Amino acid sequence: MRGNPHPHNFQIHMNESLPESLSHQSEGELLSQLDLELLPRHLAIIMDGNGRWASLRGLPRIAGHREGLAALREALNTAFDLGIPILTIYAFSHENWNRPEDEVSLLMELLGEFLHEEQQTFQEREMRFLPIGRLDALPPLAQSLVHIVAEETHHFTKRVLAVALSYGGRWEIIDAINHLFSDIQSGKIASGPISETLFEQYLTTSELPDPDLLIRTSGEARISNFLLWQIAYTELYFTKTLWPDFRRREVLLALLDYQRRERRFGRISHAVTPQSES
Image (cartoon, rainbow, N blue to C red; front, side, top):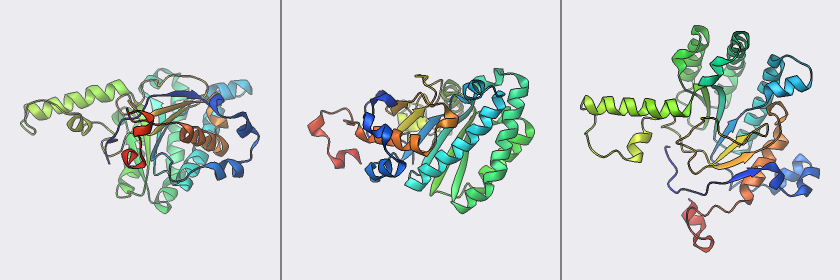
């Protein structure tokens, strides 16, 4: 499943680029405007704003994280119900270990709760749970559960939920280089020029195509060390909506914005045909 065969244009859009009329339309009206044949195959999301959402309401940060789980379930259901087969979420970055110890502990507990509660859903939806990142850095209980659910769902190919845990894009690239170099030294692969195709086989996402669309919530317009190699040609969508408020309607707005873009794949407009996009 690895790799997009044709690069496409790098764009940055905020949700304000959408027509004003869409803000007054119902979810049903928004849905009716989606072309289900032109949805992204792989959607990636940086879920940002849980802490700010809680602070604005005078609540502890963990309340924002709990509400963020509800938003995740809704986004997950919406994406897969529409037929988007792959969703990758930035759940916990390597830098997040620098947060207060009690917050980190609660986040690990929430991870465990989510996996316990969704185990049956993974089976019913034939959905693969694919954890990526420095999994050995997770606490023993969380690490064990992550591996158990990943193993239980490994055979599913219809849908994939990839979850970045203790993840960093720079780490992933360095880790891939180290493993590649080790295999060259041991004679497992021949020495010589390294191709992109070979290098990508050493990334944690080697079984997935590159994301077509990356969404970041909370108004921050940066990628924060997420999928640095994989999003080289991904469409970027930034919204001011805080993650706990990013529900079905917001997903639909992001997808409509994605479908309004002209993706030229490095060519001029008239050179793009449906065949060249496939």
